[in-house]
Length: 292
Figure 1: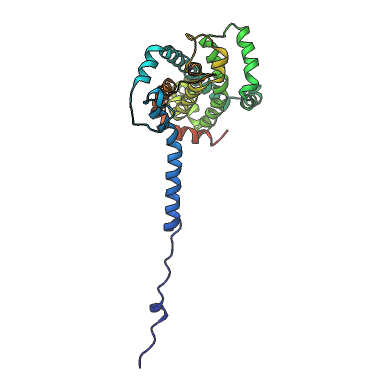
Figure 2: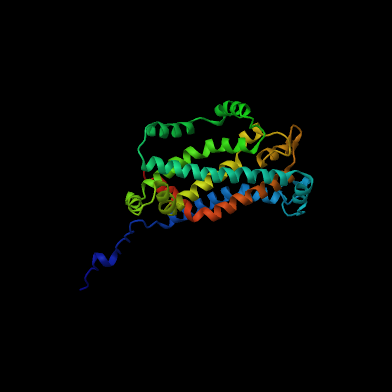
């Protein structure tokens, strides 16, 4: 007489999925989504790069590899004021970055460590200035710069860009300094350091991630800004890259060749700054968001 097989033999136990483990369908969908997002992100950059390597008559076509040439780059460098615009942007962005880091770091440290009259009002002022759009601020700032005689001068743009970068960076640096133990300041005082000496010798070396984020944000603000640069600077010799690119577009059309070539060259310094600062960016931004 044969016995019926045990239920466990007829039906295998269902596989238990561990926590966080995805099913094959979910994993496939996730990877397809990531691939699609990557294509969407890279496609505009690749389009600009390939268009810059095409002759003008093929600029609006999708035939990217029919006649590859660097004529757009040679014409841009030899027949336009691109190098002058590039130099003006380097000066403005460099000064904005340097002054922005100094002012933001000192302001953030002072607000983080000291008590003084008007401290709360200062922090609210820094926060409120971030709420106004460029369209509202451009006219009053233009009048202020005109009254100071700073229109059409790099110093006027530097001051304007500092009004954009410093409030945000000061808030971020305050949050970063809040994460540094106050015992370090106290040890500096015990060793006879002044408050500035403590800040310079002990605190700043620990704040490199926050300083990297501040420098990167200040540089990008000045390097890629368009509205103020177009309104405050006139004359080809005084334009920055943002204003110079607009000369390639008129009522009759756009010069896609030199404009895309200029866009590629403009992106290179920003990419280099990002590569140098990237190891500190995540640490600095996350630390600055902990408190504040």
